[in-house]
Image (cartoon, rainbow, N blue to C red; front, side, top):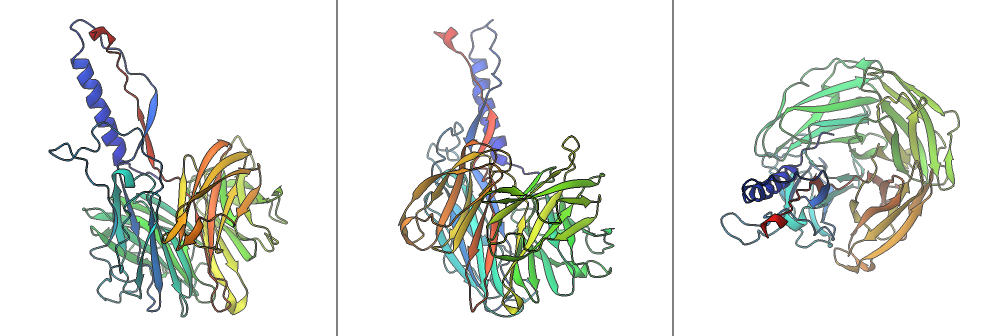
Length: 513
């Protein structure tokens, strides 16, 4: 995704100011030495997030968990903490607020209800929670600044105990962007999929939505130039965008002509419950889908090739003991511009796993996006969730709202052994953080269920930091069964973008001595 980090501009500007001053004060006739090509990583100074309307159900119960990891406190940009017009440091903030124009999904027209208490983080390392129940809970937007910005994460978790949208819905609130891919959406009669577009900025955004079915682009209407007012949210029901026959598997492409939006697909299935479908990682020749639950009763893979070439992929299943080829599904041909899907029955067989997709011809990789539709349980006691393709964790990733005996963290290393550090934060009520070093063998998936803070009260966050070795991909499963239904949700972990790389400006002023 084409992410824009304002802190990069601020950091580069500050560094340019420093080097400019040094050049001006060099002795006359002395050439200023060139800046080195080295770079340094600085903490970001401001980040924004958007959380869509959680549910249209009157019985929905939603919890927001806001968290900033501890530890990103070095390398600050010169002058970054100076207040406007004075030398006092501005107070860091991390706050979510209702979107001004937010209305509940389905157009209830009710006035948005703010959370009972603002989900305001006051210090890194301790999660803060807030509740907002019922159908009138609004979309939220917010930002974090200063020491609370690096790695700021917000988890939105909703339980709908009954009705057509029954289920456990989990979503890591996303950063605004201009380009999103959502494989595994649907316009089928049994599905009610909404694309939620949320604009956290002060200016309006304009978005386009394109739908791709098994035969290519679906003829659609009202999908171009969709206005999303500032600090507002727009839910769009996919089935109303096309007159073509209902499609079981659809890939949704959201782009913006102007501005940025947060985007997510809310899925409600008449028989399988509901959950959020997050965006796939950027198109890539190799794809990793981590964290398939050990007791999955149904797994469906959906893949889309957005370029001009067809993709021929090798499919491998990563288990606790190594990578194997799924029976009858070792290869997959994906036609350009067409959504391709395949059912993978009896895939996990009691072991948490991940799926690897790679090019059959390593010299000719074709970028694809992908997602899994996963079902646990059977019949009326079924529950649905989605696992989009996830990129590797480069520096650090965090998932919030973990609960005692309900969370499973899955780690997979596709290519080489990897060592990571995992930290369970303090609890939102109480608890002492704990850390653990974990080695993930190449081609395997490691599932952890036993890492929680000591003396835990409330929920906690899990942070993964690569230490050495190969690339690591991760996902968290939260399981909260109710009335015999194995309610669950899966969130893939993405790098938290807590730091940004900027050029290092070095100036030898020894000639001034």
